[in-house]
Image (cartoon, rainbow, N blue to C red):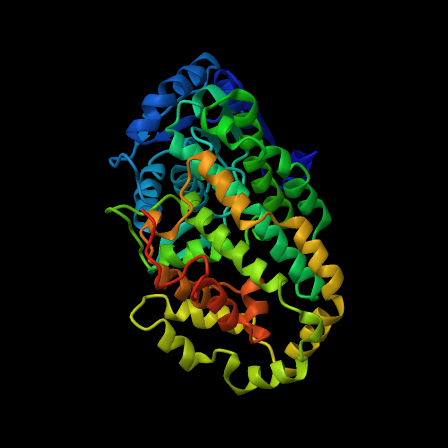
Length: 447
């Protein structure tokens, strides 16, 4: 059972009407402790009062709720510190009522104020971070993952989640769909001896993934069965990350694109696009890169020539990185993360020899893991999520540049690294962005 693999989460209540169990679960897993509900105005109206009533019925003492002033607080360190300052005024265990941002803010603030853990009441099927260890917070200009425990208890009431705006569910569907390309990246890293697949974590995420993704339209409509499968799939992603103690089971190159755009401060129509929407567009981008790579005859790759090209300038050095990320406030992050996965020419040659030898079988494994870019587009449309970069405010030219930049801000080994080390990144991008390609830079953009 996935919950048995979790290192920090001890209970997951998933179903219709389970929000009424919040008080009893709190009393069971935080015996004798007082509680404080943390929410924003919208999530407090959606479920906060119901949660407070459930806590009262269970005899749990409560501090006055902490409500963020903003209707949609940002996952920024300054907001974490404001919440932490309030938590230092008492010893109550936080009860986070909200989705991704509120969960991450409470997760880190609780950790920084000495709480062993907290309880989370999910209000939307918008991302997979509910049960994940660590909080994704912007600090020092860069989106960073800070170490802190996952919630001890998660309550996911489908009646509450089904009342969330449908775009929240669309974002969560896109975040779950990203596990398709994330899995392919792990297969690639495993085959090249970079990072072995953890079979238990793999099975938790990938075992029921196709079933969880089977009905995007039904999930969007809030139908209990497909919505329940989607929520379960998202929760399993976090539990797998707890087991593996890394985000590798649920995150690959597609998340690197999203993190890059976060760090660049990207907004569209005055707001940052939803995490899932960025990841969804990036998942299509990564799938198309895979399709171009899989159409390449790597059995005739010359590892020696590729390794020499790598040594003669293919591998970005510090000067390259400082030029590439000039004007951003995360240059040092790019330097540190790229340095962490630097490889000598000899190491690259050995990797590429392994790639060439394994290619027939590896290509078949990757093809079995992946869905086509067109199928991804179809499913995302049914879920109500964007599929084109322009829909989240990105030009095709910027998307093209992101293929080069995204792999250099995280040390995780993905298809972006394979494309770079083989010397194929630019030819593959020409296939995608050149004349007749799916993102032809000179073609008119469809509305």
